[in-house]
Length: 359
Ligand code: M6R
Image 1 (cartoon, protein in one colour):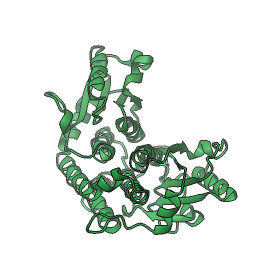
Image 2 (cartoon, rainbow, N blue to C red):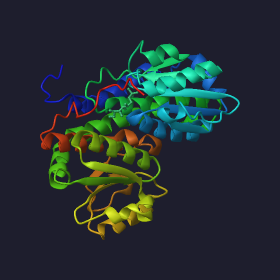
Image 3 (cartoon, rainbow, N blue to C red):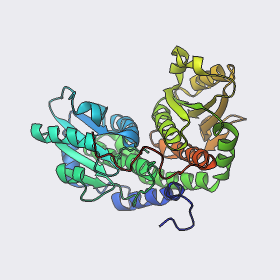
């Protein structure tokens, strides 16, 4: 039940610290060693390429998963929209391993790809929140997200759970392959920091209500920009905001705006800029200057190490590859308040259903 909450979406945002702790407890032992079905680890570590298929928010979690897999296992990883791969099947490597990310486990677009994979004898794993769901039953293996039921149409805690669960598998596979980076990956500690960090952000939620009122609710459109993993979060932040507030929002790789889209920036256009990537932090600052000088109202969401005076939201420190676990939370809260402050039905945006069982 919603308890004292007006909407499930906020309840589910607030549940994320608990989800991080549960995943850590259930999938990592006291030394931080992953507890994952050895058959899954064996199959994934034999792969010469990993393919992640998903839709919507789960696809955005897959984009972060790709970065994690490549960094800590060294296995080249591709992410695809299930809806596209189903009918334009990618050219396969010799020994592929498929991962399906799906909160519901029922997404029709993903089922098409899994059917084809089964026909071709490709080993598959479904990461889902729903035990016994179709994608779980039809894949070789399942790992559960353990996020608890997600009721709001806008996915929040399933996204962070998908990132954490992919990180757990990544560590297991990387260690199995003898990768030093994977052995040194202090995931248990990082997930504890993520839980604390999310808690800190949600404890200050009023700030997002203010920002939404000041910059978003009267706006026709908005942009999210970021580089590296922040680009992945920019796409998710934009989906969240447009899905529940009906403010047309696009997520961009920060430097791409100047290749065309910057012509849409007008006085007061909200641009939400994300900075967690040590390699490109200063370059993104430059992109912020470009839009600010054309009149954009910029909201900055910045990791502690990169913070400067005047930043709007400063995030606690976290491993760069896991930073989306924190960065997405302000985006979720901005979306929530923009929708609520516009008087919309936050949990049931128009034209949408919780799981999409048609192609
Ligand atoms: O259940 P799934 O994770 O397979 O669903 C995929 C998308 O339909 C879903 O993430 C959708 O994009 C959400 N409504 C976004 O908040």
